Image (cartoon, rainbow, N blue to C red; front, side):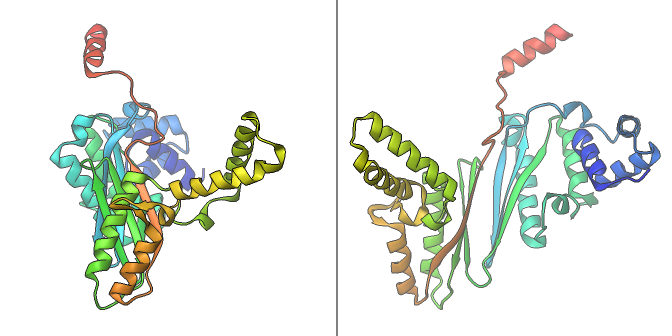
Length: 303
C-alpha cells in the first residue's frame, strides 16, 4: 500500500512520534493506522499517544531577530507551571532561532528541520516523554525585511509576542530601531488587525457597515442619513484597528502614520510599516477548566 504524506502527518499528530518513525511503522503495518500506532507504542516511540486528546492551551511565545530577519513562534503545553520552567522557555527560544535561520516554508518543513540528534519533530516527542504533558508547536511567522528593519517585543514573559517589519534603510538606524520597538509594543497593547485600512477585507467592512446602519435605524435615525452615520463609525473602526491610524501609545494625540513619517525624515529614509504579526498564547484554543486541586482529586479517585 502506498504511504502518503497525509497518512504520515495524521499518525504523527496522533502519536507525537517522529516523521521517519511514523513512515516506517505505516510501511510495516501496510498502511493500517491502528496497527501503526501499536507498533510505535511497542517500540516506545508513542509516549505522546495517550496525550493526543488533551488540551494544550498554555505555553510560550518567543521571538528572535538578527539583522533584517526575525521570527516568532508559539509552542503550547498543558500547564502554566511547565511554561515557566527554564528548560521549556529555552526550548521555545531555540525553535524561534531555528525558524529565523532556516526559513521553513510551512509547519511540515519546520518540523523536518534538523534539531539536536534528530529533527524538530523528534525533539518535540522527547519533550513530551520527559515532561509528561502534551506539547504542540502551534504556529510561526518569519519576516525578512531585505535591508529594512525587523523589531520584536515580548510581553508578560512570553504570553504575547510581536514582530514589526519596517521598510527603508539609511545611515542612521538608531531612530528606526527605536521606532520599531515602540510600534511592537503598540501592537502588543492595542492589538491592531491590519497595518492600514486598505488591508481590511471587504467583507469585514460590509459587515461593520451593516451593523452600524442597523444600530442607527434602531436608534430612530432617518433612513436618509444611515449611510453617513455608518461611514462616521467606520472611520472610528479604522482608527481602532489599523495600526497607522491609531494614536501612538506614548503620545495619543499623534497618529502612528505621522510618527513614522517624522522618524523617516529624521533618519533620511522613506520609511513605512510593511507587516505586523501578534501571537498571544492560547488565543482561539479551548481552555482547560479543571484546576490543579480538582485534577489531584480526580486522580486519587481513579486510583
